[in-house]
Length: 175
Image 1 (cartoon, helix red, strand yellow):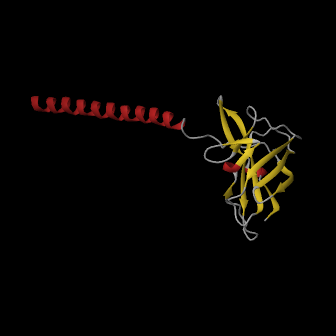
Image 2 (cartoon, rainbow, N blue to C red):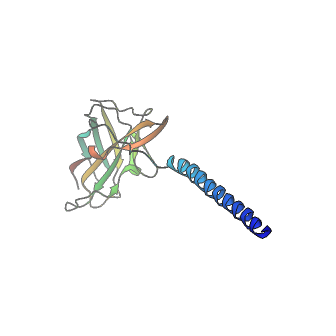
Image 3 (cartoon, one colour):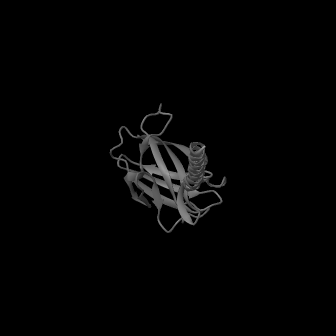
């Protein structure tokens, strides 16, 4: 009879150990879930629908491209991505011109151009002139694609957002 009680005591202590272990695992998994949830973005940042930029004019030579950009949207813009094609058959612009800017903005790393001024400084209905050195692009530029960018605040942090829905393409004759 004495042996039976020692087995019961051992069984109860093992049962309590398993219950404590399972409780510890459940609490730990809840803590890990809460911690990991903060790393997953809730929704992608989007630009407002009324963001828009257009090429209001251009001049080019074999050395330089002079673009007149106009913010024809309803929101301020802070910068843009600019890509060019050097073939009339190219459907997608792949030559990054942002590193070639000589006036009108500052290159961003790894790509893009920050406009002069603080934050989203390019106001609606304003125009700016931007100059690019295109001497290394042979035989010349046939078209450009521009994607506006904005700095937007989320969770008290400023984030750079590309406005892919506002992408514009302009055919050029810079050959």
